[in-house]
Length: 318
Image (cartoon, rainbow, N blue to C red; front, side):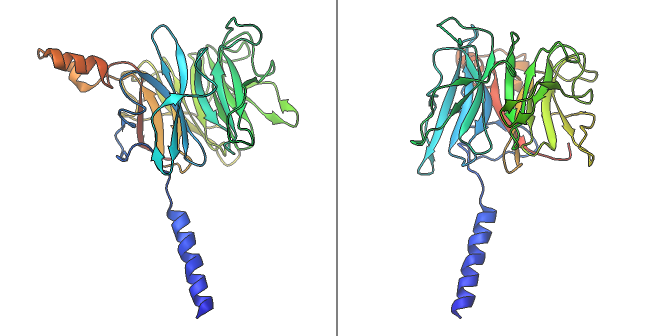
């Protein structure tokens, strides 16, 4: 009987763990139609964009920008299962910082910044990293160095489990405009960047790619492609059994909109796609006269044409 009881307890623990879900600062889970993510917390009418969540599910980082291109990374922490309010990330607040993403173990954050290598004069945008110390606090940012960073702007890092680093750059060796490239992880750093194949990159420009940690799919934005819906649409490419990237397919409407849709992120359980869009609320299409209060709401609330964070149920068959 004791053995049977022990086995039952172990079974219940396994089932409980298997059924556990990450929690977010938003209790309204999305379906097949994109909806505002964490209204009033991460999405509040400011220009809020990009998203990453720690593997433990207890830290979120996202970016808030201003029209004069001030750019800051904000942090939202969960303590005792309760999400707090946004605060400035401990490594941000002086220079233009954006596009944070976690490493697979959650102990390193990669992000983009124009902070100087020396002195106090900002430079072009590079990829930096910051690591968590033994005390649990984030340390000082470190530039990834000249193999990764150039005199061009590098944007939107995405890290695979094996350490391969994907990002956006306007590369002389690329296919045209901005390309998505990969620096493969080596024993002592990174190999030289390689532009991803024509099944992903084109002459018109691709940017801001999220790479599946197992490198089985990639979601990115592209502009000026035939059949485009907006100024930037989301596309997905998958690998075949031979390990080759297949021709990218445009994600469906209403995920893509007449606005700019970019900064994709797929949650670790592959249940949700979180992304940025500057789409307008449908109320902007009305030809009815509005009151002062209605006008103020249109201008200051999400859906006002600034960047907002959305989420939608992820479909691996897109």
